[in-house]
Length: 270
Ligand code: ADP
Ligand code: MG
Image (cartoon, rainbow, N blue to C red; front, side, top):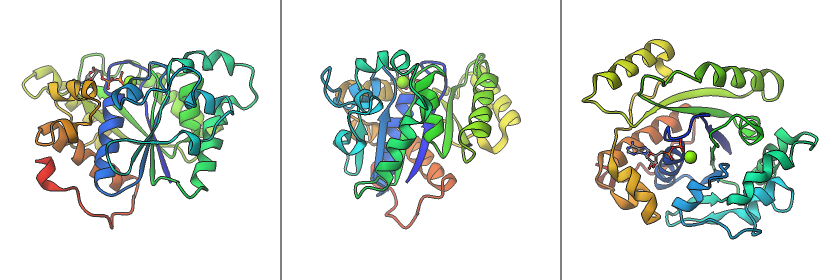
């Protein structure tokens, strides 16, 4: 079971969109995938139409030690794609856990238990909140790998130094196996000089860490969640579907997922 954090402390950079659609692409390719909604805004859960009622089992109750992932995992409309959903209850988690011993390690323990169960997925994608508090630290402590989505904007790199510093400290003190495996440019506009310049700068800075495929601005990606669908259901012929399929293949390579699975159905993704 390989665990990947999709993290950036800025909001609106494409974290949730990436988690939903990379997850769907991996599931279509034959992997069993679990998406975990760690953002109290619950956008991921809402976009799959799976937000629990207040008080019902959720990522919040799991962090409070009331449930396991096995209780939480729900299927989605895509075969092999599961979600551990959350709701606004999670808003209180950071302060409620403030005095808890080992609070950064709760998710790690829960996922470790899941990995030993007979419903363990192949891949877990963690949708992080737009902050670097206890919830994001739980994600980093539990993860093998990290992907940072960035917007190709002038301020793309602002905040990156702080994020890299947090990654380094988590690696040194709490989780030595943690590895940054990719920078994903979302909301890319080929026509804009600025987008191209920022991409160039990111490639100069981060080299091959930058995914060779960028996700272009595409209104279909913004529309799909309101229909409770991934891009592969809502607009399977779109360039966005093709780009996310490419990203998923590259990610599978970078985390060395077993590739003896059926390839993505190309009729669906071109
Ligand atoms: P985050 O999780 O980092 O806050 P989201 O994935 O929720 O970011 O994206 C922010 C908003 O931008 C959402 O409304 C989403 O639908 C939209 N969006 C994300 N990626 C694209 C894209 N490539 N083209 C158009 N809209 C996008
Ligand atoms: Mg989000």
